[in-house]
Amino acid sequence: MLCSAREVGIFSGSIQDLRRRLAAQHYVADDGLAVSIFLALRLHRPLFLEGEAGVGKTALAAAVASALDTDLIRLQCYEGLDITHAVYEWDYARQILELRIRESAGAIDQNQARRDLYSEAFLIKRPLLQAIDPARTRAAVLLIDEIDRADEEFEGYLLELLSEFQITIPEFGTVRASEPPCVILTSNRTREVHDALKRRCLYQWIEYPAFDKELAIVRERLPHAPARLAEQVTALVQELRRLELYKVPGVSETLDWVAALAALDRQTLDPDIVEATLGTALKAKEDIDAVRGETLARLLAGGASR
Image (tube, rainbow, N blue to C red):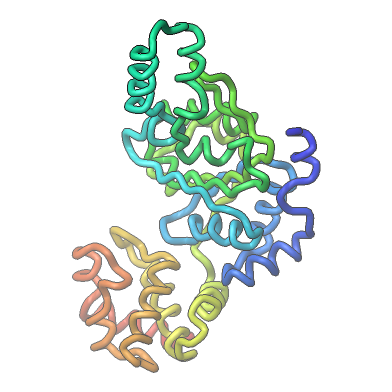
């Protein structure tokens, strides 16, 4: 059954078709990224995305799920993430209740009770197990977001899933996907991820976009924003990224800034409105203080020259 799923796959179109579908979800993918997604779908290999925060890694998984008309299952990683939150746990309260009911009814067959209590009826499925649930009739998109925030031990647990699309539960057995999910892992590179995990994945680094691409993203996502405003904000963010900032603004901050200014009915930028809304793009006091004044005037002049 698994072989059949691998042959059919979740997507059977061309790279151009995939790009059109992503564009319909307002996601602008360049050639390299589109090829990586296509190969991940066609070869049933996880796709490992690295890049600075805010360049569209998480948004890509959502766009792929929508483009393929399937479920997005997201696991947000964090320090201390364990199996009970990521994979599965047993419903101990219901197990104890079931055991007491059986005890009150008379003699218990211990072997049968163990088989029944550690059956699917008492299994609580967390995101990773949900993604490979054999009952699925259509493959999901599984997003393992910010894997670099999880502990190294958790990476080791993922190796079976990423290699075989299966998870072994000691009390229950091995659960294997009948429809392998499209797995996308993201990392902001706060630490290095082990080679063993990377070897099981295709790899793509996502750069901050050049001006033309970023403007295309803004226009795609915010089509009703004033054209000149979108150009000016995009140019200004491009200039900000040239500075040595504590937290460099990503594409998501560009979109937020344009949306905020449009909500204020602004058609163009001026120094006063930029100063008033800097916190939309810059998320550290030190960065805001460093940009204000003469630096901001110079940046606005640089952006206006585009």
